Amino acid sequence: MKISCVICEFNPFHNGHEYMLHKMRENGASHVVCIMSGNYTQRGEAAVYDKWTRAKAALAGGADLVIELPLTFACSYAQRFAFGGVYLANALGCADELAFGSESADIEILTEAAVAVTNKKVQTELSVLLKSGITFAAAREKAVEKIYGREISSLLSSPNDILGIEYIKVLQELKSNIRPVTIKREGAGHNSRLASGKIASAGYIRSLMDEESSIVNKYIPSSAVRICSQAESQPPAGGRMKRLEEMLLYRLRTMSVSEIAALPEISEGLENRLYSAVRKSVTAEEIMAYTKSKRYTHSRISRILMYALLDFQKTGLPVQPYYLRVLGLNTRGREILKTAGKTSSLPVVMRYADCTKNENAKKMFEKESYCDDIYSLCGTQRNICGTNMTTRPFIALE
Image (cartoon, rainbow, N blue to C red; front, side):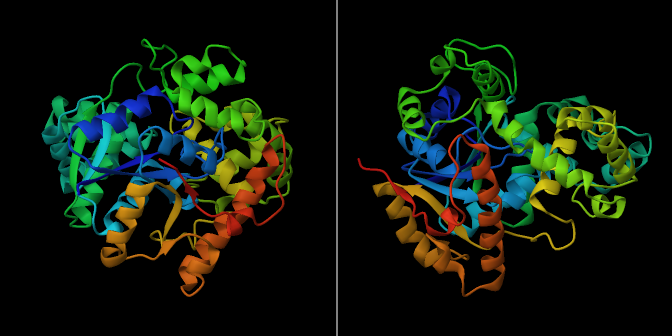
């Protein structure tokens, strides 16, 4: 048995994702684990399809086991997103490798970059550059270039390379035995508005969904198209956030400056800028337009707005995931779980009752369920509260 893991969002599951899973098989993986974001994504948005639908699509597209990446890590900046995913892969205790797509597809130079970003000289230079008002990402790239040169620093401008570097860095921090492997990203680049053959970025596909374009299915495996069409009627991708907008605006307009300051990723007086933006805006997009700057990116502001809606505070955020929540599996997935039953350092959770003995796990699951109840309000058909508590993993028939 060779178990390969991948950290993902599948928002939505498309041909590029299917290609990635098939390449993992070609590289020798007998069993594939997907550690997937739940109902909210790293960019601070509601996923276009719920986590159960996306888990089914992943299993149909080549996965054997789908584990949920808890929201507090899934909807976060790259370093925390990577930590949560790698921590879960390592917690299985039986994973052999962590695969990820990248622009460079050069594991040696990515490993060098992972060492570079933790170098003390780089950290010192980074602190100086941040005072100039540029984003963390831009400052880090400049700091690495000064100490290590352009070949290494150039990787920090490519989205998938950046995540790959973070994955490797966490594997090193955890002293994990999992081997990082990278697969060349094919076709359209991350969030590219251009397609390459039958492969397009998830961002481009979401934009087509917003336009209700008839060509969306060209970029999605037929199995995923069938699964998504069988799910409850879904609004266009952007429509999900629109359905949450009034709740978000209400929440923001009732928050004080000090309450905004308590949100994750708020620093350096950003709370005042956001408070002011709320008072002169009538849409979420206007708030983001007034708040974002050279230093504060659209994604960061979008996440902060989601933190406000879902009632997250920077104090009390969990330092690690506390369970392995199974969303779906097939026969090979059962084999993985049988092995993990002997090796895992975290409880494997199929339902709420499986984590009630651990207070940290219980709190994390309850918060996840609270946020899923809010997510259900942005669909065309609403769910009652508590479905996350009772829904069992999807079992794929082979």
